Length: 482
Image (cartoon, rainbow, N blue to C red; front, side):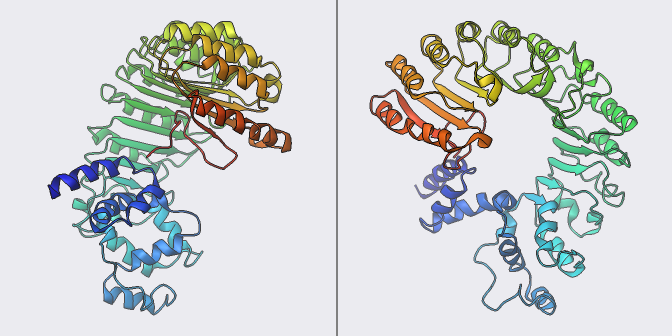
């Protein structure tokens, strides 16, 4: 019975791994709960590191050192080693699966901003890298030059690495000794610079047999010849790649070979508004998730049309030209995405195109409209918009999120609620543009409270959130991840 209790408790707490406050509360229940929660928190301790707590985490790490090592450090860093800071009850370091060198270097800098403290770095790296540790995620910062492969036990320690994040400008001393160890990498996040990119990364990709997720984060001017070579190498893994993120138009058409791709992220993060024409005839028949920002609308529509009708999640943060016919885009979605469950759209659409979308996409579960534009917001006909949502939404669609420059009048929201009566109680979020979060906007949103509380009591609204209290949600998140 005791084992069953622990197994069930473990499954429950695994669902809470993204909720730091809930996990910390669970720590206080009893010893059994603590023994289950602590490994979850320390699996990736850097994830929960808040600004200002760097020295505290550093002290906890140092408390795991041997007495001889602590004595050695106390000679130079008395403020870090105190008699009251004894070795912890749990071996927290042993639970760590994410070796984030970016964060380790950062917390060491809190001791000395020059960050030239070789003695403390040596002790910490030797503490984390040994034959008793097994990491799954490795993050290597730009200009990092330590030869990790020379630390005893690194072979076993890195033998199960499946995620690698690094810069293509990585120091030549770092990778050569690790390439033979990295045989199980499944995810690669690579930042590519304008010059001095190292071909050792490409060699690593060639020897990797299990790559399924790729993120290529290009600088504004990335080295063209290097990118071409990299893309040709990635094309050799075409059958296995399921996830691809690009922040710049590729040099070649290597993406066309990724016939089994399920997730595609195109993020023109520098707002270059390049034409991405190399992707104009891209066909990905197994694509399920598409996320885009700053991609021209013609390319976007073609990718949607050629997705084989399998898209279940479509997130469009922006497209250009800004004055294009958005009705055509919405029409393309409604005709090409019969299985769509979640949609984020960056503009207001007239109620006729919205109605067609709601009728054709019968599996919709969540809608996110971004009206965060002062010019376009003046053309939002809220009564028609809300009336269409209430009348035509499919049965499973009751999650709505509206990001606004200016909040709708109370009477329009009341119309929405009145027309929603008898349907599944909705989950509603209204996000006010932070640049227009003035007294009038705040006052308007606060006047919603009485109406929303009344609608909750009537079973029309199940949950309501806004951004006035500082709580943030992921795009397709209506209930905070637990």
